[in-house]
Image (cartoon, rainbow, N blue to C red; front, side, top):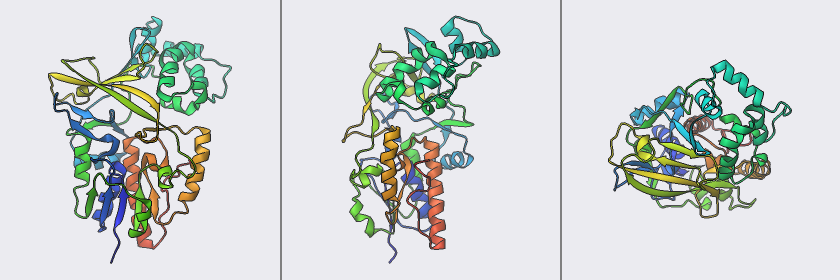
Length: 384
């Protein structure tokens, strides 16, 4: 009798792998410790306001990967949505990412693109030839004034560390534009699933051969009952934290409701110390095609993740990667288990990358099964 496939976690990683394997003829059981599917992308209607709420904080879909965009559009109608973030610092409102409007407003100028580019270059610290830290990177490319206004304090609130403790690579993800484009992302495809992410995941899982067990934890001791296990939980938890707990940041949300339009925008960042929270998100603006008389908002607070918290952002400092290396070593020796997703590989992944890697993982498994080869513990190297 053929053993079933076990998948731990009903987020995008688990759902996509489950569907692909079920369509190939496998029986798949998904074990989800929470009372719902879709992981941290879970969304649901608020009973009081009717607003579609991103329960674990906002998720905006953006990608350049054709295969992924085509895949998610099979299961949901994606509505146009452009993320236009505003930032409040020193009692003024600006546009993020930093663009020509931000620069002109902040410095009281009317620069054209080339002028702004030359001006910003003149502010950069040329003595920093090879930026190592977040602060180095900011001072080198945007100068002290913009760094302190938009990045320094926000970074401390978000990561709980000084920018001198964080790698320069974090800031490399934040673009500076010398035009008036205020689209936070620059991907070809951007949008929101019309009925929310949970509906999207539900439709991905709607295939013969998949059984979902909610409110059910999977014990690693059960692995021998299955032909293979795909694990999207925290990699350190699989090994009972034998090498110590990998550090994450988690989020607390202060939810409040109001009438009308509270802030006029989906996301406003608070970049100075006037408030302890990092941003306020107004969820009805994530569904601009809907109309609601009332509104629901999240104040977002970041802190160190404790044992019973939901992990959000892997920190991945140098010492953490050394710890991760030890987990990767034992994981590679674990038979018939593949570690996937943000938590399983201890990497920050956007939704589109998560889906793309899940599709690649399913492809790899089917190829290994056909060739009677061993399925690796990682399809994507978490140390890369």
